[in-house]
Length: 292
Image (cartoon, rainbow, N blue to C red; front, side):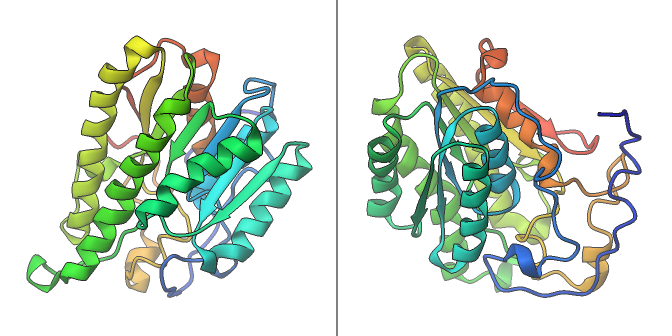
């Protein structure tokens, strides 16, 4: 692969006016996100591993699923039922890499479901070595006085409750060398007022990662987070922003553009692989140069 100027990568793609309802779908996201379908090349760094990815149908989750499969892992993805079309495409990409794929539709706001996905993954893949807690929900907020209780409850139950329920169920199945990886955010460190409830959950996720790294380290289980900056996924046009904000999304980074899901895949591979064997309790920024 030839070296490229990171400022110019993807820059020519304009963002048209678009509006989606949550959770957002890949086909309706313009320009289409790059998940590494044509570019990610594996080298066997996760050969034989078993991975569970929440929010694995699209965006960052799909990019991680592609990378893990091409690195030799079998992959189970969790997604909302209305994202079935995206999930089918991700399953096909995993299987094209010659790995086993498991599709688990449901809502991780439901404690029983968020717990059951672990047992289903262990049963269908024959074990569990990597857990990527990636599912998330965000929405633009027009002032805290206009923040409905049912909305911040949805954010907290998706981003925190579901994460904890799945992690709690997963830990007893994890052996030394296993890895828990949380998708945090630059919002944990530099919160936007219009994403206040989302940012609060991301800050809590960082605390979770640091505490769990201390708790699980003596058992040989590593716990880390990736903190994305502005990444172009279906979640973004479904956040509720106006066309001008969408068009400017990511342009305030030092690299001058939004990132693509494919540009995060390597971070998740590193944290799950033996390359990251001495990395735990870390928050790895992939932010286009923005500081955490």
